[in-house]
Structures are given as structure tokens and as C-alpha cells.
Image 1 (cartoon, rainbow, N blue to C red):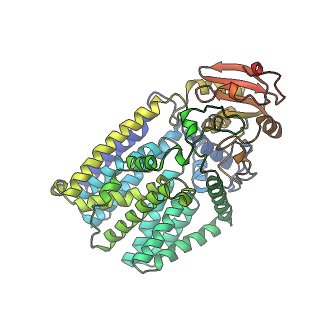
Image 2: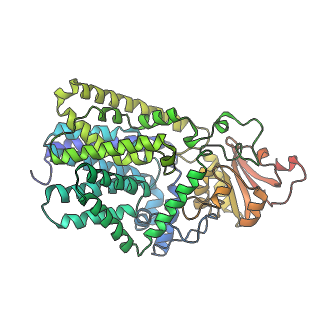
Image 3: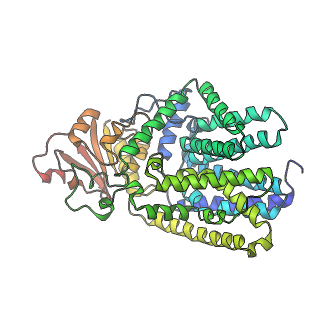
Length: 512
């Protein structure tokens, strides 16, 4: 088969990629694109661009270590882009990366099966997976990490299954090294798949390639991978220690500032803020095709067998990491789902095979999953665009106005609630924020997250915090009543900016 696919493949794949792209950016229509992690990556890119080094420093994060220990590849690549373009079009990076992943899936499916129908069905499932639509609303390393995990595993299979050229092992190890320096969760997924493949097929080469990639990552990073691994260990320890409070309200569930009758959201703390059944339902809602995977045949061809094992291993890991508390400390199960969607979509499409296969049980379930995915995407749009606070896809007008005003004030630390607006505040205002969590030890971070466990006056004095930026729809200022004197600077809708001096308040009325 020629290396380049024929015209009919292009005529099918490109429109599907366009549909996927539209679904991934549609949530931003009429709004300024936002995202929780977006502003951290833009700040990292600026710092890397100013000083081309993997030892990036972001002093605007008051709870970070002096040197960042986040996986460096993705934000460093962002730093190679022109700043003017990135600041204006940052919201395109994740959707474009994910659509390239879709095209790779369609290409691989066509190369392995010589069937345009299989390639089209696989790409359709990928395009409509709700998890991917929701994940690409923000600028994060996850879509890039998922693409690198797929490339690393495909190159590993190319080296082992075909045995055509010994050099494929080196290429596969290089791809794995880039992955290890790009995303901790996706690297963990890659490691699990490598171990499962070695076990199922009694072939140690899968683990040897993965081990070679890990060693190469240490070499290429000048040993900085050790810092990245320590960063991941810090995160695991933090969320393991505080998993019972994860999802709780930082103020209303605080032992210092909590109210006698917290609202419902704060009264049910827990990992992801819900029950185990709710977590499983969310997992299935974000990728209904896991259900169809149960009916998919394993296949006899070496490539198809291994893609099937790859899909099942990560689907199982996603479920286990959702329901088993020790593994949930590594992150919610859906953290691993991104690496599973590529082989899952291929395995299902291969099992359906042709238009006639759509009338068989697997085909009917796949069609039902496509319909459920469309409904889930509609729900996601309605949910995100209907939120009054903690908006994860766009920047509220009041926040934008407040931060513009803050940028003109004398330099001083800022305490932001809800916390998800802290990165935006730091990036757009140029002021440091009492926030962290991206990098380094989380002992200081634990003083304010998941819930506030230390009196704010002492924290404000220690870190030089002079301003408090609140979204009143999330937390009322009178809840922060223990020992703070706050003077209202100005208000914009539900957002209000206060000056804080950290001195004891003479009365509750001084907070208003």
C-alpha cells in the first residue's frame, strides 16, 4: 500500500477533522476563551522565551519552589512560538493537536485494514468522544501528551511486530523520552500498557523499550526528569492525604472559616466531590465507547491484537483508578482515558468492519454510543455556558475588568477565590498570587487547598498579600471574618477587589 492514502481517504478524513475542530472550539463562541491551566502555560512559555533554559522560574506563584518542576517539553515548545501569535490564538493549540491525533487514527486504521469504512468509523468515534471535546477547551499539555503516548506506542509496535529495521527501537525510545518529559499521567498510562503487553505476549521488549525511553529522558533533560518525578510524588502524597476533602469548598468546608450550615456542595466532600457511582457515571458519560469495547472482538492480526490489549488495559485502569482509593491518589480515572480513546476507537471500528456490521450487536451498540456522545456534548455545552461561577471555558467580564484594574495598582500579592482564577489573575495583572500546585512541594499549598487550614492574616503577612479578589457567587466576603481587615477597592458585577492589611478587624462590619 502506498505511504500516502488515496483521495477518498482525504475526502472522508478532513471533513471529520473539521467537524471535530468545530465541536472543540464551539464552546468559546461569543466569549473570551479561558481555561484553568491556560495562563500557567502562557506564563511558562514567556519565561522560557525570555531565558532559553529548562530551569524556568515563575516567582509570581508565591507557593511554588524557586525552579519549576513541571514536565518541560510542552510549555517549552509553546515558548518557541511567537508571543504575539500565542497570546492571541492560544485557544487553538489543544483543538488542533487533538485533530491531528484524529487524523493519525484514521490513517493508521486505513493502513491496517485498507478499509475506508473502518477508518471513517474510528475517526467518527474519536471526533464525538465527549471527554476530548471537554478537555480541549483549555490550553493544557494533555492533548499533546496523549498524541505522544500514541506515537510512542505505535513506534514500539512498529519495532517489535514488524522487525523491519532495528532503528525503530531507537525512534520508539526517543518518542517515549519526549512523553516522559511531557505528561506524568500519560507517561504512567504508557508504562501500564507496556507492562501489560509484555505480560500478555510474554515479550520483555515492550518494557525494555519503555525503560530505554525513561533512561533517555534522564539524559536529554540533564537529570531534570528526577525533579519532574519528585513533583509527581509530591502531588500523589498531597491528594492521597487530602482525598477526603478534594472537591470541598475551600472556605465553607474550612475548619477556620466554615459556616455552621455549609451548603450542599460543601457538605459532601470526597474525591471529585461525589459518590463512587457518580464518578463511574461521569467516566462513562465522557467516553460511552468503553461499553462498546466490551463487545469488540480481539482480532487475529498482530497489530489488531495489540491495539485491543492496549485499549482494554487503559479502560480497566480508568475504571480501577476511579473506584479504588489508593489509585485515585494518582488522579481521577479519566486522566488515563485520553490514552485509551485511540485504540478503543480503532478496536470498535475494526469489530464493526463494514456497513453490514452496523446491524449486528456491536454495530448497534456503537451507534447508540455515538448518539449518547452527541447528547453528552450538548449537556457539556449547556453546563459550561450556564455556570454562574468557576467558568472553565471562558473569562467572565467582571473578572477581566477587575484584573485590568488590579494591574494598575501598586505591586502586591493577591488572594483569589475561586482559585481557578488565580492563574489568569497572575498572567493578566502582573501581580503575584497566593497560589501554587503546579510545581514543587505542596506543603505550603496544603495551607489553602483543598480547604483553608491556616488563618489568612498570618499567610497574608508571610507572603506579602495586599489584595483579595472575590467572586461573590462563589464565596461571600463576610465568611473571611477571622482577623482580617478588608477595604473595598471596587466591584464589577459579582467580582469585588479588596485591599488587605492583615491587621485584626475591630468588627465584622469592616469586612464589607
